[in-house]
Image (tube, rainbow, N blue to C red; front, side):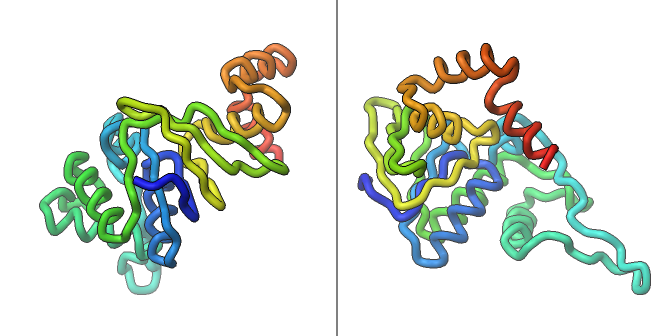
Length: 196
């Protein structure tokens, strides 16, 4: 494993996997960091299923019209070939999903780092330059030209904001933010998005 990449994606759910795969397929050197031992996020690790409808009926032809992109359909097709997708096209076997997502990443050239948590970042001019991730046995110093926060609860983003305003400890920053604003940074971000 090397220390410098074009892109580091933190979070191995659907958003993180698809971001990493698409970037790697476009020629970037990509590292995907996942805190658990498998990809798929809540769908595979928390049994959040089935897939919601990813098609609609064409009113003129009564045929299914797919609403998702090609990459999701690539995942669905691979799951179906392995017997991991129910005939309703929504219920799935989470173990097959894990396998399909890992194969997709490996075949696309994405480097995977499991059981690792980003614990600190260093920023420069408001951009993340390096991240420290605690793995199974050691601390890793990782650098990239660009980072994607696909953690689902903005872990990487909160650390970057904490660092940019002078806090070395993101947890302490979150406590100070909550005390001053009356809301957690993650909920503040979600409410801001709704107002926008």
